[in-house]
Amino acid sequence: MLEARSIVKTYTIPGQETITILRGVNLNVAAGEMVTIVGASGSGKTTLLNMLGTLDTPDSGDIMFNGMPILSNGGFTLNPKALASFRNTKIGFVFQFHHLLSDFSAAENVAMPEFIATGKLKPAIEKAEELLQSLGLGNRLSHLPSELSGGEQQRVAIARALMNSPMMVLADEPSGNLDSKNSRILYDLIAKLSKEHKTSFIIVTHNEEYAATADRCLSMEDGILH
Ligand SMILES: Nc1ncnc2c1ncn2[C@@H]1O[C@H](COP(=O)(O)OP(=O)(O)OP(=O)(O)O)[C@@H](O)[C@H]1O
Ligand SMILES: [Mg+2]
Image (tube, rainbow, N blue to C red; front, side, top):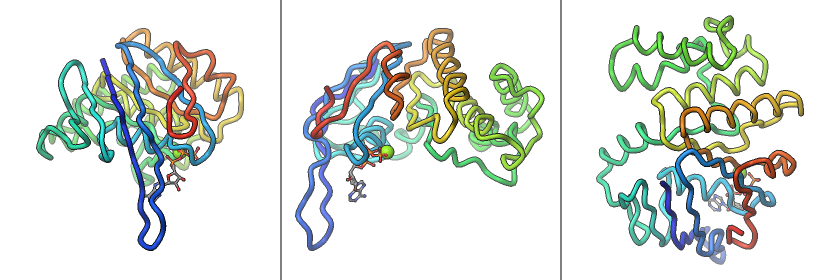
């Protein structure tokens, strides 16, 4: 489903030498597959997720999504509008710090992207409530983020990522600073979702024990994914 080839990314800070973060990363992910990525801090895991999610461009490399070229020789093949639409409909993001909007309820946070896209509030809220229900948050719909536990906030962030039924979810340390029991609950939930909905998950984690339970566990070392 996803095919990334020879992704190279360097950073140059003015007055300093150029550093190469990704030295030619290759990655294939099948539909419904759950892949974990581990690696030292600073090894380029978030950088890679940003490239796969089309949030940033590499220096060179190619990405195909369902056989369609998205990135060719380091440049996007779609114009900005088509690219945004691709990203909004096909990819879900879960960030390490979940970026929930503090003035909006759990249901409103999950519904927001769809509401913005369609301008219709009621169907968006209904779908959001259904999703939250399925993630065990049916009795937290109108809670503000500050009224939710860390694990509950992470589940709201996952519900938001799943709102548009993406084909692929990119998750950067989704268990963030959860304790081991809540991490386990969260990861079991992700495994269930990937199998039930045939959603592919690429999950960056520092939890090596969990990482080993995925369909495939890869390691980022010296700018290469092993
Ligand atoms: N915009 C930028 N400009 C310059 N250097 C950057 C930039 N973004 C990231 N880097 C550097 O690239 C390297 C990889 O960063 P990245 O965030 O991908 O690491 P990571 O593997 O996600 O680490 P962590 O596990 O700590 O989250 C780091 O050394 C970082 O300093
Ligand atoms: Mg990171």
